[in-house]
Length: 210
Image (tube, rainbow, N blue to C red):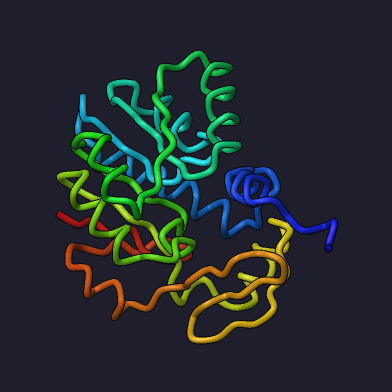
């Protein structure tokens, strides 16, 4: 057994550690945050898919204290970290264990003004079709940020290296790692099939669906 195999929680936590991210990934993170803050209307209810350790929720709540947030994740270890971070920040942000590909679990969450799926989170989810269907079930508007051709192979190797992942192969816009899952990079044609509007970011697109 490979004792250096990265844990799911450590990988996703590193995604939001701005101080250690490569420059373009850090700029993309901050750009997404600014765009989202401009789009969300006051007093709205907001659900984040794959909230990880709540870094993004805390950032958004600081910038937009008039919003009501709930974060969901499939990983209990990440949710434990999220709750600690939220308490430390002295904020009131809800968290819940949920699999976005499970319709039954999603139906228990209720309905939201906005559903956020950020930082190419969708690219990590094996059943993309179910995830997208349930996002439409959950929210009036959906904001999805994904990596596209701007996220080049060389940038990907640098970024995933920081996360502790080694790319085994790159094929058909999918990065397959040693000792971990795979991640999808999107084409403009794939994103257009979702409908909605696209706003170009440093490494991809922020898509608004209704």
